[in-house]
Image 1 (cartoon, rainbow, N blue to C red):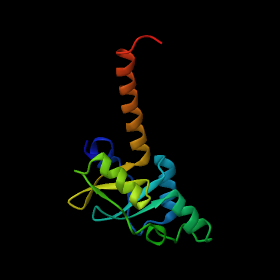
Image 2: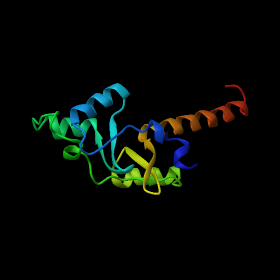
Image 3: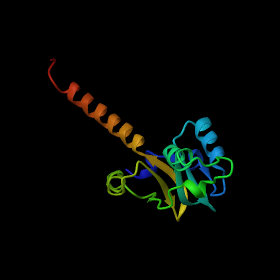
Image 4: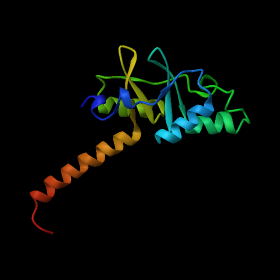
Length: 141
């Protein structure tokens, strides 16, 4: 199963540019009910800001959310996967890099976004389907 089959598609990915004030990012996260924003330049992901980044790199440091930008707090060593990447490889990459969220790219541009939550939901659906097979072909308990 390719990554885009379970991911948020491009139009649902919450994005901003590196010069976006962190206060605006926080408002966007609240309004969109998300925990992260992909930071891009010309649709190419260059970083990610999570709600935790805001707390640790802004609030705890006493920085001004109006003058501090995404570039000041974002994780710049961003891990991405290509649209052709399979679910198992995504899981392995998340484990290897200790990340919970990854932009999906196509030719270097943002094509979607996958989270650990998306993978857990997929596993839940798969387990439900498998349990239905067992229930259908097993004697009553």
